[in-house]
Length: 135
Image (cartoon, rainbow, N blue to C red):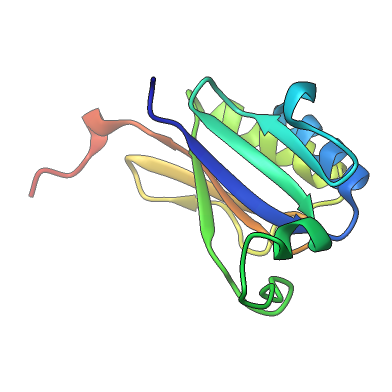
């Protein structure tokens, strides 16, 4: 079996979150979705599980982090071009997300940050290693 990653996020409004991530380009796998969780697909190896708070707490004994006021994690997605970074960021903003910082250009990498309405932070970036500094 191929190695895969499943990112589990606690969300306050499951359907609104599903809409948000669909607009960012995630697909939905209905086989692993129900009224307490939605399996969102980024690629064959990367999945996002959107879970109601009640469902999320069934997997942990720790309290759910307040991601509106603190960072619980940074999730980064590499993309094929700066245009794709911009397209997905703009779609996320149109879907109700925010961009807490301006685009960052490191010469070899351009990066934008978006947060969903629960405060989950996503770094969208394009990297051209041929421009990576060698000194």
